[in-house]
Image 1: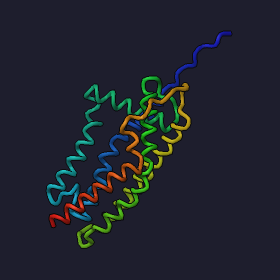
Image 2: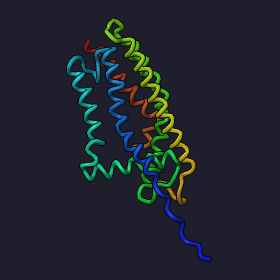
Image 3: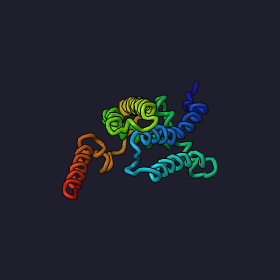
Length: 212
């Protein structure tokens, strides 16, 4: 009896379709966190008033444009299909195939390096609540939406990090060497990046004090 090559695993079409629809979560997140922020503080991306609303809507429209245009633009369609397959492979811990295998190896390693970001997500709504003008109409519902939105974001980040850590520890598929990190990749680690943020914050504070 001869032993043939194992048959490739059939992709989960339904899972990939759900993953493709999840691309619309980004514009929903932009609006879900941006609108309550505007209601609470009247500010977005350092802007105020009508200009801030315009920027918020523009960001939401631009992030929604990519998944909307994907069926019409071949390059975007290929990118959307690959992204969906990578998402499914990561969360089901299955080999995405030779074309996408290395790409997922690298992406998972970078997600693990950024695990520390999740620790700071709970701080962001607290900052907004401290900056809030509670006399503004709708401030209390907006505060609830902000806290709920960041809780969802924290949960999503944790699931991504756990799936990526599992992938890095036991990558599915044949044994292989993951390409070495790029020169910039170690800077994704918490200490180095936090050092840069601290220097930037200090520089801004000094600039405000010297010009104020």
